[in-house]
Length: 213
Image 1 (cartoon, rainbow, N blue to C red):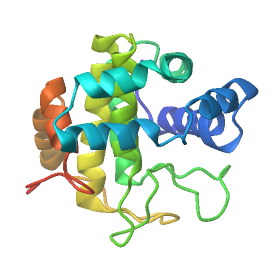
Image 2 (image 1 turned 180 degrees about the vertical axis):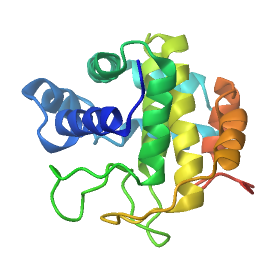
Image 3 (image 1 turned 45 degrees about the horizontal axis):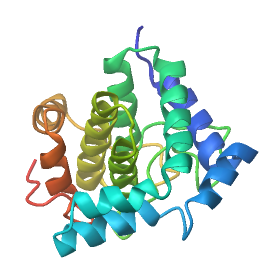
């Protein structure tokens, strides 16, 4: 599959439509079954990491909401695979371009023209990458495919690092992308991390600790 920005734009458009803008009844029901709120996995992940009860305590907490987690996880992988058809490089590049704030979509309303994480510029750092990482750990805790989700988690992490550096601004046509050298260094660092290293990285909020690229 030849990667193009339009491929990424179409993916993120459908992804956001399903999980954010126009969720199906099945997705709404799964959100409701998470209990407290959709941030439950992130809050519990953070608490267990802080209290020294991770991973056992987190795994036990997530078992209670295993059914909706598995539904949401299945739908995420389904839509990822629909667009990238197993092409891991194309999937990775869609996350990288998302993080750079360069995926303009005229179908989107004003103030949301770019497909990017929930932020706009230096004053509003994103929380979405931390939500996604903890969601991934929750999915695996209740039986999700650990190898497949590790690929997604590494893409989430490299996107987080890229966006943390660039701090793109929403509705801006000229957010500067990474140089090829910068992108190479980000890939070499983030796309090889283990599960334990990813957990350690996401202990830092809102930005990666010691990122100097």
